[in-house]
Length: 526
Image 1 (cartoon, rainbow, N blue to C red):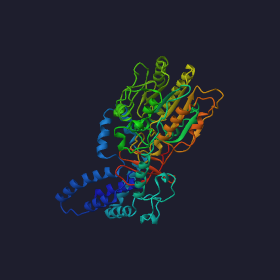
Image 2 (tube, helix red, strand yellow):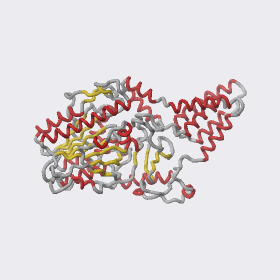
Image 3 (tube, rainbow, N blue to C red):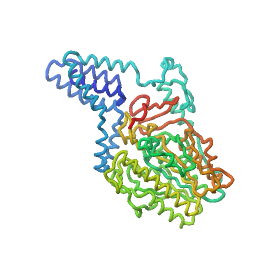
């Protein structure tokens, strides 16, 4: 087997530490092929010419990287990254644990190969991996291996204490989407009572795990908000799908593939608000061109107005692709001035900010990167939002301000993904903050923040907005936080193009691109 034995030993080590997922059958076949005797130089050359390309392809297949078509698409986007960001990403690829572990395996191989047939141990180890199927969750019992277990209903996917097989998980996810397809919210009447605006601030790259990673105090960050949803599932880890899901929140959670179908008007959040008497507006602190975000909002999200100009605002940072990012407060405050002059009775704003996106560089601190840069930018974002809330209050108008994150930034990554990579929609990326502020409430109303710890997603958030529109949270006889009770929830299901993560019995299981169901082992410590 020669050098191929070292190749397999390194892969077995990565498999044991969870950095890749060996497909045993393919690896055993390749190991058997490379162990065939080659009595002369010509046959050895032929074996290497066939074996090493197959080994490279198999290594990619066993990794958690996206399928080749998706990877090629990502390479097209990477060409737009700034040189500084590319250099920063290259530095993240260095994992001391992996590097020193690999050096140790090489040393063991060099010493062992002098006296032992290492190839025999390699094939034996691969057969052991094959005998312990990774397509079964560690939650399995012997009974479930026989297929005798009846899969729990989709509504029990999260709470289930059953031990489930890979097939049962697939069935549950399919059933979940079938049930979500029946959910719908519709406005039966126009908004009544004293008018107020609804301002949705959609924040890219913000999760609870990110805030914990940079040790920002969440209590003070959300002090001005009346309701905080602590277990909100963004269901996606990229901006386009997250925006589509939010803007289609009047219907249940769809599959990733259906996000790119033509949207039904009855599912569109802003169409519903328009039917209720709200004038739609769209604002961003960037140009919206990267990854075709503009089309995701306009065509697939059904926001049928053009984005308003922002180039007169101050530039706060340079984006990961070199484009300008404008100050959140400057963009919002200038828009608010125009809104006050418009005379519209009710407006609904969709504002998207990428101030926290990975790779951005502050104009006033261009050398900061990684977690240090993220902490500075996150603090500035919340300062800007706080100033904007004060500005609204000073104007004397009433507004319901909804801050909802698209997805996390993966500030500290995990064993499956380097910092900043979001191909697998893990809970560290998709469990994001959602907070609601009511600016202009009667001063006699309690100002304490209400935490909602039940798991909810976009449909639950749309229901909260619907309740506020139809019941008017600024009615002095009501407490707006009452509308946060009993929001519709559901099991945790998050997905990207080729990866899926679910929660079963309090544990997270993931199906990586091209792989089988395995546990998500948790966040990587700082």
